[in-house]
Length: 117
Image (cartoon, rainbow, N blue to C red; front, side, top):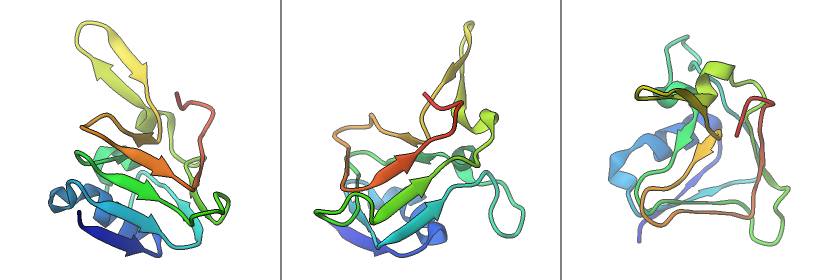
């Protein structure tokens, strides 16, 4: 399986949103990764700033120290954490979405906002 190490939030978004990384393990270097609905240039991020893992993708922090790599989603707006459901309104979701194949999130901390599932 391919693996990739990222050291900032822009590279994290790039790695997670790249369909070529299906099945990859993305390793986060120590630090805090602040999620946002827009990029540095003011453009909209895919998935409104949520991280939606590719099929069989894993996110990994620093083995043995889950506080070394932190994904901070406290700044994501409510709209980033809701999904439309056909004929049912909307559903709350998490800032890091899994469920495509076999995903793992290991050795990191995710700080969610109050609107997150």
